Image (cartoon, rainbow, N blue to C red; front, side, top):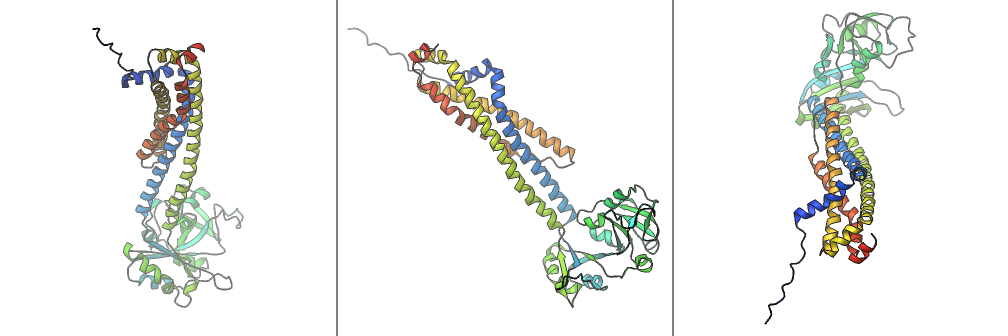
Length: 401
């Protein structure tokens, strides 16, 4: 009795073999592989860079808001029912200071019909966007500001022709040091201080500040404040805001405008988030274009390697093995593009943050999502080429060689 015939073991594609085969096409045609993965790399770079830059900007803005505080409110005169400009009472600053929860109050008042110029030869109508404001001595304390050079107004200088320039005003006037003189109104004023930028009070950045007494005595200032700055405890902001208008102008509270300057900074966060979605959409389009490039490369690869496919089928490789090989090759090609995109995107984020003096906030979730999107794009792009390769019969593939 003859021994039973032993069948050969079924064909198998082990993981090491699949890894080796999935890179053979890339290693054999490196120039084509680089060109095909560029689209994937650009898309992932865009996604990581956009989210990283946005995260760094938002972290910097949040830190700035935290440092400046959200507990400052401003009071300004509004308009009456006829559209005319109203005034705040001269005693409004004192009245606001008596509100429970208020920690500090200060004010500035617009000195109308006067401009500040570098010399008396410049046309008075050429204001260069610089306002003249009468300022109280406690203004910087309330605003949380600081002096970049020189000193702020003091009891010794507020009664004399001394001026403190905001950061923008000093730049526009070309004043870089204290001791210089500017022509204000109809006489020379000596610059005693230059302010550091004040994000919560941009109107002060663009102003020349003089003492309240000298403004009343020599510049015809009426003594009515045009902007009152108030700081209170964080938990008291809502309560203070509710009574601020009525306290500042009890007779006509409807003619008072109350605002919180930090709201403008907070609005920037929402605006930047809206742009993030736009740029992410552009990154997704780049990924789509990259996926089309990978699919095209894989189709050409299938056509060029029909002899290899036929030989492997003749030696026992199944359709599933061929499909897995080309799908893996497409995924590896896209993954390489994803890694390159992640590295470039992180480099862009770090460079931007360091260049803008912002905290480095790497979007690790975006890094993972970018890699996953790259691999997923590669798998989708390889479905048709892999299926086409798997459908080739051994005789058909070898006949086409």
